[in-house]
Image (cartoon, rainbow, N blue to C red):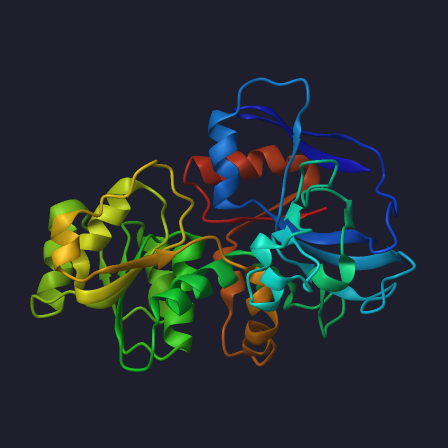
Length: 344
């Protein structure tokens, strides 16, 4: 089959690799129908040294079950399924508490002999725990929306949930990427009354307004903090959802959060230390968040998509074939695309 491999920073290739096969009785093999490029894929795309052992890329995908191991009972050949961005058995102690990203048997796509999601097919470990069956056909117009359950929608929802967003709250979302826009959707789903989106790309922030943002602040740093403070009578917002992963974004979050408020960070952190010292201690600010256990949220969020209440698939503004995926990476890296959809 054909799959996406990263050899070094900026060097993404589509090459022939071994076809996936059932290796364990709990495995399934799926034919991939849709995949995409994630913002977190751009970090190794920008930084990976040259290697003779290229990384198999992709962790957001959905497809059709082609084969199952003898112990797989929850899905069968022909089912359309969506795949969370980590695999898990969904039965261990961590999984039972909704922390599938810490599954004692789970892991990441594209490493340790496990296929990546940017290819024509993939072996799925622990298929019964990992895969979520979709109530649609493989040609459904809802597939791009449902693909967001694999990562970005659940990550935005994790930010809102861990921040404790509830009806009537004021929320600031930092970042107008796909996760930030998903956080806007999620804050609205949870009943936030005011949602301030901090971003400077008009096409994206306009989409954020469609998703539920009541205000947009394009300024950054001290000017951005002052703008949010002005919108909130000088207090700041009760919840802040940091969806970037840079230290400046977290500092900005500290500036716009209300005393006694909560900051949830779900952007993959690109800094070693957290700027939370004595001044933040005096303000009783809570810092939470972390990697999203997407599998815990997928079945709760799916009905909102099926009903048409939300359309998170609008974050996909470019589509490429698998053979053109290097261009999809370039478009996102150069900020010419918000999120690239891939059709194998």
